[in-house]
Structure formats: C-alpha cells, structure tokens
Image 1 (tube, rainbow, N blue to C red):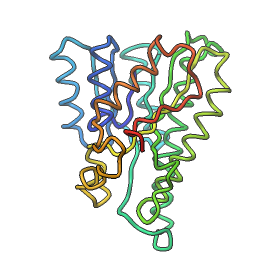
Image 2 (spheres, rainbow, N blue to C red):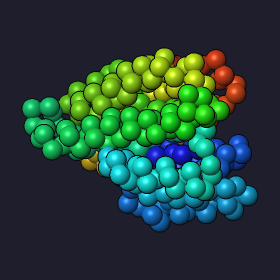
Image 3 (cartoon, helix red, strand yellow):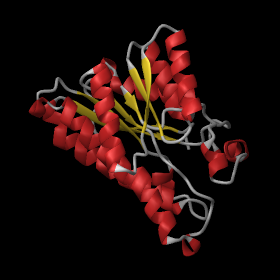
Image 4 (cartoon, rainbow, N blue to C red):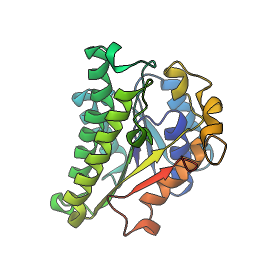
Length: 244
C-alpha cells in the first residue's frame, strides 16, 4: 500500500492500521521526514514492513520517482490511498489569489489524479496486474461548500468526487475498485494549517453526534474499503461525519 501524505493525521493512522492488517506500507511525505520516519518506526516496532518515500504530489517527476521506489522495494502495488491534500487560510472567494487556487488544485486534484494514473498502470489486468484498490480522500466540504472559509478546498474535493465516480467505472472490469471517504470534522493538524487550530472543538456542537471524529475512525473506513469485505463496492462514498 502507498499512502500519500502518510506522515501525520489520517494518513499516519491509516499506515499504522494497514500495517497491522498485513500490508507492506510506503509512507509518502512532502517535507516532514521526521514525522514519516516515526510512522515507519512504529510500523516496524509492531513487526510490520514500512518505508518512507518523499515526493510532492504536485510534481509529476517526483510522483514517478516515488512509484519507482515502491516498485523496487515491494513489487506491484495493490492499494493506493490518495490522502495528500491541503487547505489554506480561511478566506472568501473574492480575496483568493490565483496562486492560492493553482496550488490547491495542483495538490488536491492533479496530484490525486496522477497518483491514481500510476497506480492503475500497476494494478490493472490490462497491464498485467492482478487488480487492487484505490481510496481517494474527499471531504464533507464537497457537499457543504465551506462558505466563508475554504470554498476552494471544497471545490477541489468536489472534483475528487467526480474523478472517483469516473475512474471507478473506467477500471471496474480491470480488477480495480475505486472508492472515496468523506471525513467531516476530524481532530487533525489540518485545521491549524488553515489558521483555525480549535476548529474541531469549536464545531463539535454542530455535529449530530456532538463530537469531532478521530483520525483512527477515518482510517478504519479506508482500510475496510480496501479489504475483501468491500469486494462489491466501487464508485462508493463513505461519509465519516458523525451525521453532519
């Protein structure tokens, strides 16, 4: 399994859970090598197999090099978790720069699509593969729009939703299942990167279950979608939102 953005938050939780489920896990990171090393240390401490792979998913050459490293270490990929993604500082659309919008789409949309492209080349029976699964990380923001905060982020996740549906249908007969998880308010560091470190706690009263979710709860959904227990699920969306 390759997990993009696997050094922290939902990605890290997924890496640890997947390793316990028997996957050899490649933990991708963009800049924080120490965090990625710690995830792999924990995987190995528990008796699992893990490696770190550096790549900015917005840079095609780095994505290609990442997949080649995973090929060399683990052989053909059977699972991809497209988790790498960003938010920016909260803002209205009328104050967003083109540079911000391009960065958002480069990482959240194009990065997801390029990683999926490379995974398909390795998993598809069309290319001699034995099948596999892809889970794209979307967001409940794709449904809600995130007005006054992250409309650009919400739009990028809407694109991920559409991509998930189309790719799922495109490769369904080639042994590949493609699904998406849409987290809601989850306790991770992404809120701080958007300038709202207390957002999960502050928004908990708006969630029907009256609490934020954990990265581990999202990770369980991801690993389930990749498992044989979800063998007839493709093009599906699993909302992990506490009812929001």
